Length: 484
Image (cartoon, rainbow, N blue to C red):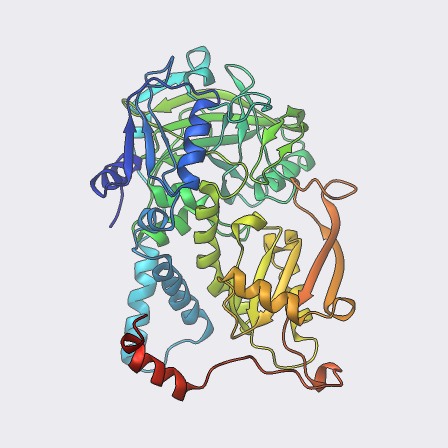
């Protein structure tokens, strides 16, 4: 199950009965958002709007809006298959194989990974049509105005490509862009993201400009990989090749010194000027609240290239769950093996939709010593973007953290608030509105594990209420007899 481009994935979803083609005339302003929001919250299909008022370009949305569609996008039937591949690759790093046969197998695995590295090609369909200078116009994109109080129209599913001006390493991230006019847009590089780091380096180096390419569409694995919280020295395009088990083809841009996915639907070429900021927003965000206007870098367009008869991919965010929850859940599953390599006591984790990823992280841990849950909390706050986790809840290894009812039961029963809640200070997500000052505030860790005398408890911990296996077998055998 491999997809060369967005339209290949759309065709696959169509065959699976997971795509609805809407031929009625619809507006890019608010109407598509309301349709898509109702659809994703009811578990409905991907949508292809073929008749967008004022545009010839169709809009694709809700492509990743179920766990199954997200798995298919990444070439598997279930996300856990991908997590197993990550776990296998990490095991090669942790424990080099012994024995000739195992070494040969390992060599084959590593060669396979090497073959999935990005490949530069001379030409790609993303450059079927090339518009430069005054001929390029951001208003040709049917970008949505999503919510009534939004500051304008936003590009919401872009792969924003930039390069570290010191190391030369590439970064790819999904950062929204507010269209200001035909040739400028806001670049929402949040403080803690790698794109913002590149921008700050550009200021330090006193660069006149920092080249930026924006890809819209492409194969679905590459589109999703922009959401991966990878370390700054890892290439998201290489990660996409690993996920899809095939190299991502890249082409050189026409007006800037960057490469873009050859099978994207659109590529916007341009640059930002270090030090130039402009108000961006408000925007109805994935928190379920509007983020207020704030100053962000400005993207200047130099060219638009696109395929013949392109499709415009987009998404909406808002009160969860929305499509980004399913994208984020796939990230969570794929990154769990890497977390376990650092913290092997972690059994599972869950970042539920209601916690919008960074507000609530549920973690089951094989507890071995007093203070172990607190050790895990502080370790997670020191790992990449987990530094933004506002609440971390630790439960015992036998608790199913994917079952929110069980977690709520365990937590509310097990905590002694004065002793089991930890507060810390640190960086907070740009979009958090609850802190007294932006981007910095308090965090909470909750130890909801069972406690014993080693934890300073002076009385015995009560056992769970569980029926005996003998009676369970008896009732199983007589179930039909009861007439139930």
